[in-house]
Length: 222
Length: 243
Image (cartoon, rainbow over all chains, first blue to last red; front, side, top):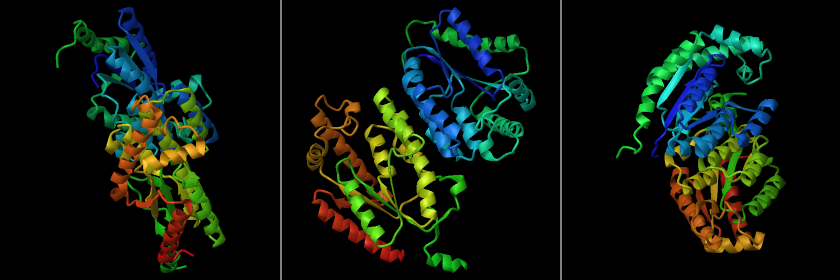
């Protein structure tokens, strides 16, 4: 794929503040007149209905869970992410393939299998990882939304009978996966306990050089 | 019961094509998985019906499975194909989810319980379709690495030119995807069908060795094919001592 745009993605557990940061980045880029497109995890209209039906019925196995999320991703990738990157957009992804790697591996899918399933995706230009101690992130979530959904809490893994305890253990394991991916995948780690403005400053500084890149009207010869 | 006695009943551990599924890794099965592959209108369903009748008459418990029949996504795929234009990878993954759901909830439990599972297509059609649409070969084979190896896979090999007549006899119209109309092979549906089915057939021939497919001459009459298949299945069941 000849890609002219830029792909910026955010990762981190629920409550890490990544979506807030991506929202602010989107507004800033739009303000600067950059063509921006944002894509969120598990948001393909076509797949969403089926996934949520399966989730409600508690029918999903680690393999079908993984494949349905891959279907969602592929749909957004083929329909939006890939063509928009080719058209020169800044594509912002709220969660990317690393979310699948982390969750599916924690659920017991074979790591090599999962990585191969997603290997059609291009590597992001910048991957931010919002790192927050599990207790802080979990507290942020539990204040606003006390009722946890079955898969969200990781109840399918029999970690604990208590959804809150299960959620805590599950999120802790996901953090372990993120940490092990951080180096090999070249994540830019952001301390998610800093003030929102401080974090956003770091994010924008990191993106600034990409804007310079875009300036010359004609793409470089290859 | 001793371990040896189990072996006498044909109990064995599942064997995966690739990485498999972690929590099924040591699953012991005593049933048999028999697959019939072949293009649309190749006569698969007719054959499966008569084989099922015979096997049940012989006292075997039989489970029929097929594509797009999962609780989870079976109907969703049909709806999605009507209402959205799906990308190649999206469709490939969708079918894989449908297959995985049936695989884990129907095929494996039935094999554990000692059923003969007669599958109206398995992973090979899905792989062939993906390959014919130009998806990466390693990717396609890896995708189905969670599936187990069947006991036998028959492939009804029908000449595309013979096949097209059977399609017209059955439906009097060509199916959009089965004609590869999504691929822009030709503006003419008839020609597109022939090109597409030829590609599928080539992919099947290429997979023959890798997956041990048994080609069955599908250009013959329904009865001839039926006798051929039935004889091969009888020989197989006798050989493995499936009672």
